[in-house]
Structures are given as C-alpha cells and as structure tokens.
Amino acid sequence: MDGWLERLVALESEVEYKTPPRRGEGEFRFQAGSLPVLVSAPHGAAHTRHGRLKEEDDFTAGLARLCGELSGAYVLYAWRKSATDPNYYPDVPYKQALTQIVRRYDIRFVVDLHGCAAYRDFGIALGTMQGQSLPREYRRLILRLLYRHGFRAGGGWLSRVDVDCTFTAGNGSRQETITRFVSQLLGVPAVQVELNSYLRVVRRRPQASERDPFEGDAVMIERTINLLVGLVRAVARYAASDGFERGSPTKL
Ligand SMILES: [Zn+2]
Image 1 (cartoon, rainbow, N blue to C red):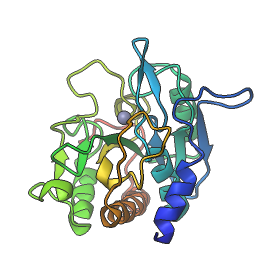
Image 2 (tube, rainbow, N blue to C red):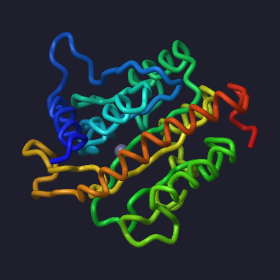
Image 3 (tube, rainbow, N blue to C red):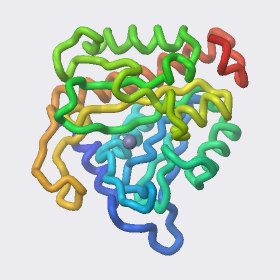
C-alpha cells in the first residue's frame, strides 16, 4: 500500500465509531496547523439525531487529519460516538469548540468533510447553500481546482461533481449544518464536501456500522487527498492575497 494510504489507515484506526468518550476524553479532537484554514469532520464517528444513532462517515476523520498533516490546515474531528449531531443541532460542544478555534487562530475558511454511500452517482458533492456560504470567487476557485484534479460536473461516476443538488449544506431546511453555522453566524466562508465511499474508505473496518466488506478505489483516494491538500493551500493563498474581510459573508 502506498505511504499516504497507510498513513490514512493509521490515523483512522484511532477513531472508535460507536464507543462513547472514556473518562477524560471528548467526543472530538483538535489538531493544530499553520495555515488559517480549518478542516472539520463532524461525522467521523457515529452520532445521535432525534434519539437515534446515525452511522459514521468513516475515514472522514482520518482524511481530515492527513490533509492537515500534508497542508498545514487546522483540524477538528469527531472520534468517539456523539450524544448529539454537530451538523444538525445548534449550540452543541463541537460548535463551541469550532467557534473558539476560528477566533483564536483567525481561521479564514472552513472545509466541512462528510461521506456518502458508494451507490451515489457522483464522486464529490459540494454544498454551498446555493452560493450563500461563500463569496463567488471562492466557488470559482474551488471548481477550477476540482477540474484540475480530474473532477467536473460532466464527469463520469466517481469523477462527477454535484454542486448544490444532492447535498446543499442545508439550504431550504432549518438544519444548522456546520457550513450554515460557520458562514452565517461566524461570518467565515465555508463549503461542505461530501465524498463517495470509493474516494475515502481504504478498507472498511470491522467495527464500522456498515457490515458489508468494502474497499475504495486507491487511485481515486489518492486523487482526493491531493485535491483536499490543494484546496486548503489555494483558499489560504486567496484569503491572504485578496483581502476578503471577515464578517461579511453576504458579500457575494
Ligand atoms: Zn455527514
């Protein structure tokens, strides 16, 4: 196995999808970085919505951490079973931690990573609340970057990008997604990135909620890692150069 994939498996192995935090542990963890971009993985472990356990977006915690190691992004990731759903409920501990990180490290952009099932007819779905979660220059930048890494709206299955169609990051609903919270309440541009299982799950772990054995596409996973690292660097560069002011999320 290639070095990156091995590292991804090692990082993901620290996540316990359905184990509540032990004494002294939190449901989520923070990894420091050096660029003013935060990669968030709120569904890295199983979580609870309306009293029901919802399965983890496996390998999103590992991917977020690997992306942080390779790019310098800060990372916040769920690593134990959560009593809440940070991508749904307002005023949960994950969002309180996220707010502190954004303020303390002057975070200028948030990438919120999620995972969807292998049967989806796209590789990547971007959710920008129909453009409300980020200035359109960022949207153009991200679409250009996707194209450069082989992902585009007209691409075949795993190379196809779905934009604000299947997963919109909460536009039109009352759900307080991370993307909605960050862009509308903290005033920092954000995008939700939903990844097909083939683009993130190296090999499904025995403790995963999904019982069937599954192996993702190694080449596509590496391409996705490259894309995420490129995305962090590009938005950091852009935020530093163009003078987008914080606190003006509606300047579209
Ligand atoms: Zn999710």
